[in-house]
Image (cartoon, rainbow, N blue to C red):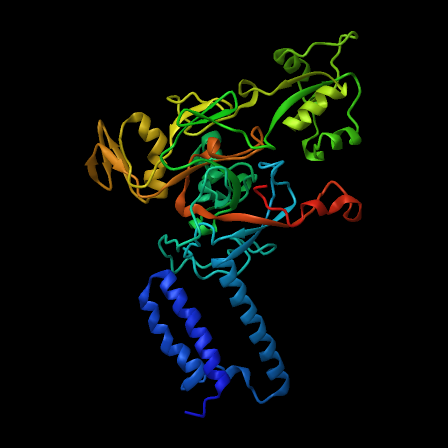
Length: 466
């Protein structure tokens, strides 16, 4: 063994200390077998680990230096992205106005503890598919079971949380982004979805950590009983105060003129949300159904469907711009709600009561409970479930009850009438939790030019929960 320099010992000591800290954090002491390898890389050098970086050809040596630097950067980014921070861009308005489309977030994975990846062999900074070439960015093998390292805390009520989309386990690659596979199956039937490649494309399965990232507000914790009555949330029978910037959809009938860009900006309504209802087919019939009256000419004034916060609603009411304002009720456009069963005639604004599963809690299995929790038992907790007459079998064994092995959460968007959330697809299992947004590091407004308000300077370095 060649003479070992002081700097080699220092570097070896630092790397070993960091490695030992990770082993203790992970709790897998088989990883201690890696210390001899670290010793050989930095001290004994019995194995020529860096042989490829020193070719005799000068040009090849230069290329090897660049490759070495790029590989080091990729590995560093991989581990930072995996265990500490992840960058995320808000793609949809489901949390407006708390978070805006175009916000770039720094997500802290230490907040709730980072997960050991289900698919460890993957390309950094790519969730599931390489852009342009549309191929998988990860390798299916090896596949590791769920394990979460110790974090700084637990998910709390009203936390804004990034998580993997629970209904994203099976994906029809050509379906619109707002329609998951299960929605398509309910609407068109499984046979059509699997056979019509032109409309739906290939059907693929994605592991938990490769499902799309969503961001919502956690309003229901494990063991809670939740109910929504006329847009007001009740947890265990107690009223939950609405987030400060929550917004709902309103039908806004003007005095006869179209609203201007200045008026929309005063109400903080983006271009995508400026929904003029008069342009829709059978609009007159719809207006009569919701109680909007004709004007003196026997026609209808312009009517918009706009998402408005409490402050924007008050501003509109005082402005004199509107002839009438009424909230959009779920009887008009509430949509389907989980668990999609006639046993639960719930709607978007009037939902529940529903109990949120808690780890270690047991339930009696019956027709109603199976409708609510069968997906938890099978898709999330990996069991088989069969019904043979009046007998229920889990993993082939007759049973009358079930004990949950995961905690679950109920997530909702602050843009309550324009959010696909737990009302649409059910509970979020603990193994889907990614982390907590801690900072908006950039915010862009696609409705404005880059140097004319395109960058929202006031939102930069904003803490999301503020």
